Image 1 (tube, rainbow, N blue to C red):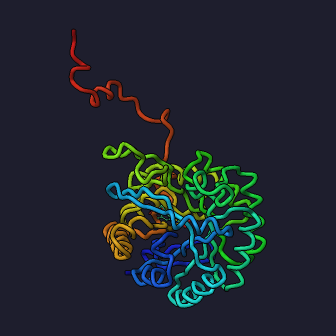
Image 2: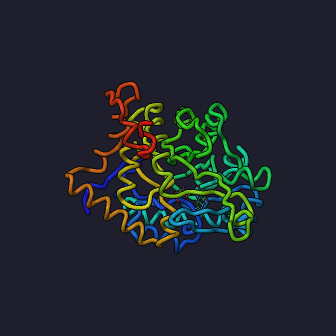
Image 3: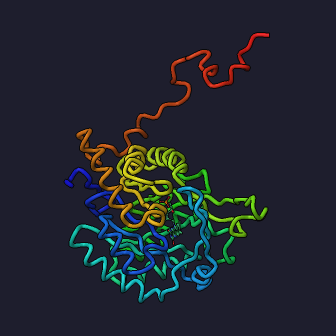
Length: 340
Ligand SMILES: Cc1cc2nc3c(=O)[nH]c(=O)nc-3n(C[C@H](O)[C@H](O)[C@H](O)COP(=O)(O)O)c2cc1C
């Protein structure tokens, strides 16, 4: 593989745009090393939370596959935060030799908590901090354990406060999928001083089980799948307009291979965070995705950088489309068109 796949997020130049997203597969040092060994440019270590209730929730986590879509309630790392950050910082130092990284991540419960945890990440020597302000589980978790920020003014203040303590670290903000206000939130994160914004978190869902007639897993839970990708792509494109093409966005939610990574890039993502795929097919799924993306680019003599935002910048409004009267008739059953 060549420089074809190189991408930039803030001050980081990465060998490729495939990042292993935060979640259970990267809740251990061996999992993080496996993600990097599989070829990922980086891993977002499993998130911590400043409130013990976030970690306790992990003991009530449960998961169900619906095809390639994962329906689950999750929890947060139960490791002591200082020890966890020291462990992942050691892996990050090794990763840096290959231009890769390991990021600390928080699913936060309060601004004070986010600031305190960000300071700990910096003290540990980590180079990247991802602030997740949109974990889908907020509405169902113990009150106060997880906050979902959907107000741009509050988000800008939060990011500015975290920025102040992260200083020279890369600060990435991960946004919720449960708001239609993503362009304004992305802009607020940028104005608060974020180096990149990742979107968008999974959705909350209820799956009635026809065997038990009860809710699958007993609760509402987070839900994502390949079907989510076009929805994320639209928000990436709208957010790119809001923040400008020189501000790096990242895509997450629905990437199931290298072609999906290319789609996210065309919509405006400079990198993708993939997780469910790793739970479905193992870390080798990352290797497969990178190879597929590389082959796609090689065939078209393109670099990854040349994909970023191309489809987003070609978006046109409905009113600009050529008129095609009667086109709707191609999409209805014949009876609709029978003359009586
Ligand atoms: C089981 C599970 C646990 C997750 N835990 C976290 C987490 O701790 N922190 C976080 O920021 N995102 C977390 N996520 C979100 C993922 O990092 C990712 O953004 C999301 O699953 C969408 O991408 P995907 O379609 O590739 O899975 C989790 C997702 C799943 C499925």
